[in-house]
Image 1 (tube, rainbow, N blue to C red):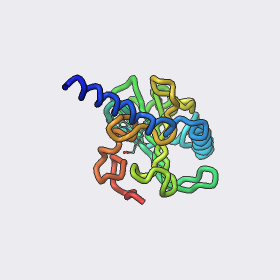
Image 2: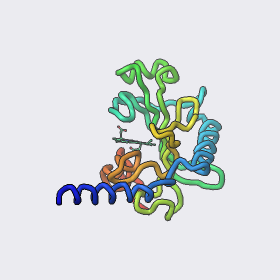
Image 3: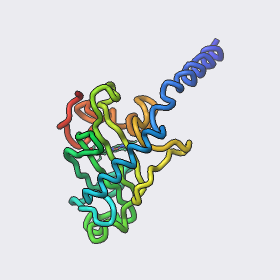
Length: 179
Ligand code: HEC
């Protein structure tokens, strides 16, 4: 009896995976992620001449030292909220990172708000994880981390950000309510 239930449970869990397949890491997602990187480079938000905001102490998975900048930003013909979190490693103290941010930069993670309906249940955020050079990074299964990355109860960016206070998928404040 238990064995049967177990098998049924396994089939249900595996069977639900295709729901999430193709939700992120598609060619369109990667293309849009590249457009965001180009726009951020132009605006000196990433790259060699990037502005740095005051780094602060964080914790995994993002980094031991982090800095966050955000505001309204234009990507192609979309103008919306962009939140950039820079993830540093190697040094534990923000003051040390501040001496040479580029040296300690490990990854750049962003959330860009898409129009209502893009992913209504999850706050309509487009997520990307980049290398410091702007390459879109991949998960262990080789899927690019761009788009509606993850799912509630499954993991990834959305799986964790769903726990953010205020239910808006943003941890640091509740300034952007669900649209
Ligand atoms: C295991 C949990 C977890 C996962 C997975 C995760 N994050 Fe976060 N994220 C956090 C926490 C906690 C914060 C707030 C940390 C801070 O700033 O001190 C945060 C903050 C952020 C912020 C700043 C806005 C905010 O919510 O405060 C961005 C942007 C961000 N994450 C992007 C991403 C992206 C992109 C991914 C996936 C590639 C991702 N995160 C995966 C936990 C997670």
